[in-house]
Image 1 (cartoon, rainbow, N blue to C red):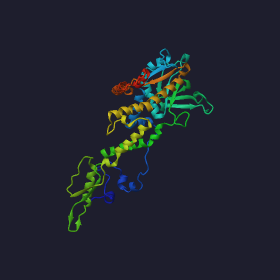
Image 2 (image 1 turned 60 degrees about the vertical axis):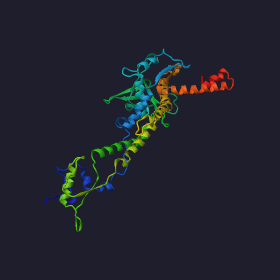
Image 3 (image 1 turned 30 degrees about the vertical axis):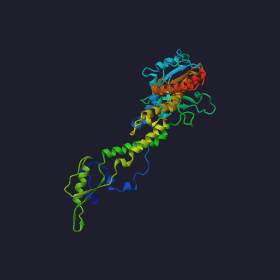
Image 4 (image 1 turned 135 degrees about the horizontal axis):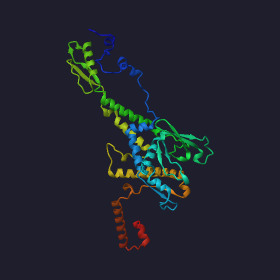
Amino acid sequence: MNLNFFDAFFGFNNNADNRIIDNMNRIFPFVNQIWGVKEAVWIDTNDWWKLYLEIPELRMVIDRRASMMSSNKPLLVDEEGNEVTNHWFNDVLNKPNPVQSWSDLVYSLSVQDALYSNSFIYAPVRSFDIRNLFVPLPSNKIQINLSGKKLKQMEQDGLIDSFVFQYDDKNTEKIEFSDLIYLMTNDGMNIVKPVSRMESLKFPLSNIKASYHKRNVLLENIGAIGILSTQNNDMGGAIPMTPEEKKTIQKDWFRRQKDELIITESQVDWKPMSFPTKDLMLFEELTADKIAIIDTFGMSLNIFSTEKGATFTNVRDSIRMTYQDTIIPETQQMYDAIGQQCGLNNDGLKLIAQFDHLPVMQDDGIAVATTMKLKAETLEKLNGLGIDMTSDEMKALLGL
């Protein structure tokens, strides 16, 4: 019998017959039990853009938020609320840059804001303080140069000296403060350069990646986990396998793929030591982490795909609630900042984000008709009882 040291002592060899495995774990299986990884593993928070591209739950929420924000119709109005059509800013609304519509611009700004709580628009000032170009810049390529004077400054340009933009080829370009529109979502602590809200998602995003990794390992690399034991018996009890039988089965096991069966002439019994996937609670963990992302961005679970689904009424009401509580105020906040930095306020103008044109934001025709019918019937009954009402009282009752 030709057994080397590893064959005799550890029960395996490192020849070409074995597939590639972690030899240290094979040699010292107790390492994982005593010095195994016990601490949590968290994602790298230095590149939110990479996580946005890799984690579907994160991109799903951010994209839906951006799509909802960009669905508005911008309207330039004066102090009385009348639409203004003869102003240079209308040209920007019609064509902000050569390749994007205004809706595309808002979408890009929403994604950048979600990832970094900062968004930037390159909008160089032309003659007569006119801007005819709006180009969204990636927030992770912008460096903010602060003036160093914070407490006594009344204007934003007193806080920020300039910006530096880095191209993909690592070349940089300095951008004057006046040529860049700087938008941000406050974190309640920093005057400029707020901390991204993504930092609060470090733990759920880490768990999502770990959940996908675990499921992939189960699907691709791990078959059934358990013990093969002998069933041979004699008058003295169970007959153990010979070293040769153990070696043959072990070598056969490591050579096989995940879906291949072991065929042996030895009489063996299988004792499972694994849990069903559902008992690992991977999907429940994924749902909980997804909800954390949804709540962070002020969205509603009912407007996203779920295993249980939601009724039409729940989805519609959730969409309306999301618009009213999150999308409309955040979009208007963005427009207010743009208007202020473009000097629209100085002209007595305001940029309004309109969402009334969306079907979900309009009143339900059937519900309105039913309500009007009930009011009319109530009015008719009051008249039948001889109760006199003035025309103003009738209009108030009918909601006219």
